[in-house]
Image (cartoon, helix red, strand yellow):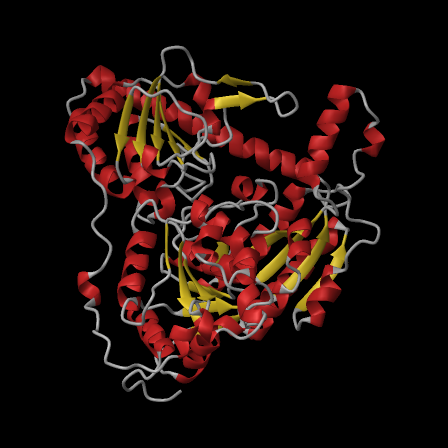
Length: 581
C-alpha cells in the first residue's frame, strides 16, 4: 500500500475514518457503487483488511460474529439497494442479538446529473436507510465529504452504546470518487467515544438488594449480561452470597457450566421465591408453552418476587416484538448490568454479613441443595449420553461427547450451535470466551461462526462449529471464505438431513389434527439426494472427512481434523450423519 499522505478523494477520507475507528476487517462482496472506496481500501495504508464474501448477508454475519466474540467493531460494505436488501437478514440478526456492526452502503450518485444510464438509476434509492431503518439503531447518508467524519463518529457511538446494535451509513458514489477541494478537519477520536454506561437508580437498586438478601430460595436468570466477560465471575459471586441458583438462557455465556449453583436445565424456577432477571429481554424460562396449541402458563409459584435489572423499555421496538411478552415485576431497574452487578454484589454482601447464625446456616443448606441438583442433572445428562452412545445414526449426545473428547485438552471456543444443547450439558464451559452465545436460527450460523473464528485467528485457540446441515445449505459458498482468508476452524456437521425444527412442528401438528404422521417429512427432509458436505468442503480447499454414520468412527475423524486445524492452520470439516434429536 502507498503511504497515507493527505487524502485526495472522498474514499480516502472514508478509509482514514475507518482507521481512526480502529476497524481491523471489512467484509464485502464487490459492488460498483463503492468502487471508489474499494480502490482506497486496496491502495491506502492503514485500511482494514478486506474479507471477500460470496454474499452480502454473509459479510454482515461475519462482522456480527467477530464483534460478538471480540467486543470490537467490524464493518461490512453492501452494494447500493440490491446489496442492502441481500444483507438485510444479517442486519436484522445483529439487531436481535444486540451486536454492534458498522454497515456501509454504496449509494447514488444522488446528483442525477452524475448518474450513468439505467444501472445507476435502478440501484439508487432516495433514502437507502429506509430499507433497514426498522432494525438498525441509526442511519445516515452524508451529503458532503465534510459531513463524513461526524457520520462515522456518531455511528460508532450509537452502535456501541448499550443496548448495542447495527448502524448504517449510505455513501454517495460520486462523493467517494470526488477529489477534495479543501482539507477535511481531523477528529479527536478520544473526544467522540461512546458515553459512559447507564447506572441504576440508587433507591431501586437498594430495594433489589434487600429483596435478594431476604429471599429464601432466590434464582438468577441471566441472558445478555454475559456480553461483558466480567459478568462470568460476577454472577456466580452474587449467587454464592445469597445461595441462589443460576439459569443461563444461552444468549451469552453467563456462568461456568460446571459451577455448583448452575441449575440450568432443572425445574428450579418452580421452586423459587424470588427471581432476579439479569439483562433479559424475553423470559421464556418463566413460562411453560405447549408448542402445538400455543397455550402458555406461568411456571412461577404464586407470590414469587420478580426483580428485573436490564435495559427494559430502552430495547423495545416499534416494529418487531423481539422484546417478548410483558413480564410483571415487583422491582424493575433500568440500567446496564455491567455497572449494576458490582454495586449489587457490594450491597448484598453488606446485608448478608449481618445474617444471624440461623440465617447463615439456612443459606448453607440452600447452597448444598442447589449443588445436589446441579450434580444430579449433570449426571443424568452423562448417563443419557452413555445410554445412547451406540445408536445409529449418531445421536446428538454422542456427537457432542466425541467432539468434547477431541478438543478438551486444547484452548477451545464453541461458535454458535450446541448439538441441540448437548455441548452445554456435557462440556465444561469454564472461561467467558468459550461460547459467545447460541445460534440465531437457520441461515445465520456459518457466517457467525466464521466471524468468531476470525476474531480468534492467531490466538492459538481451536474454534469449533457444530454446524447444522440446513443452515449450511443456505450459505455453502461460505466455506470458500475460510480457505481464501486462512481462517482456521473445525466444522463438525450436525447432519440430520432435514430442517428438523420444522419437521418437529409438522409432527406435533399431525398428532394434534390426526393427519398422516408418515407425511410429516415432506417439504423438510434433505435426503433425496443427501448433500455431500465433505466433498463440497474439499472442493473449496478444506480437509474433510465423511459422511460418517458409524458412531465408533466419529472420534478418530474429528481428532484427525483437529490436527489439521491446529498444525496446519487450515479449516477442516467432519460430516457426521445424526439422528433428528
